[in-house]
Image (cartoon, rainbow, N blue to C red; front, side, top):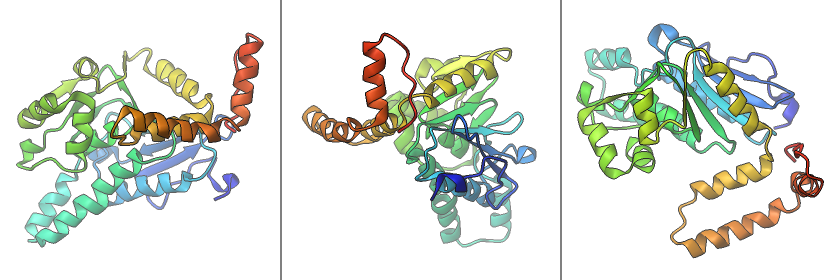
Length: 277
């Protein structure tokens, strides 16, 4: 897909519950969950909208993707109203399982597997599958009032949408087990302490501090950062294999304009100006 096909203005990706915007200068893309009346719950429509937005960006020169929830919530998680409707309609169990895999699970996986550096701006509650969507991002920035929890047990369910993979990678097996078994709702400081949040910013500075970090990521050498992301996410069985994977990947990055600019800037003792090429 050509770069100029990506929207530089608001684009609703087939639903009014997800908004995709992209700044042509910074090349920062923003995926915003826009169903605040339901606290941005991951309904079939919203989850599909997130996938569509990320698909629109694939293969472009986007430098960073930011995911956020509109108004006071990041995402309340699974669509409880839809769960009630399915139960009342005596929906077949296969349909419920299909929803987890094709809707919420696919949405979380699509963000996790995005080729670009990704940032979640968590300004309010992120629960259940919504918490998984947040931790599927590479970097999590928390508003001081944000909360996150994996309380599937509170609605009588086992974990889903990637919890069993994503959460232990962040906090370790034993802490993940406790969070799942108790359904503990973490405030921002506790999330920072456990390594879920990268930063916590207070109400007065959140937007300024978050945007400064997002711009710093976006101004980096994009090809190198995307390559580094692939290496960080790779399941290397040993240090030796990791080094070999890195060496192979580095060969392609050596030929980029940004590498040449980085070397020149180092020699000339100035800040590099990376173009993302």
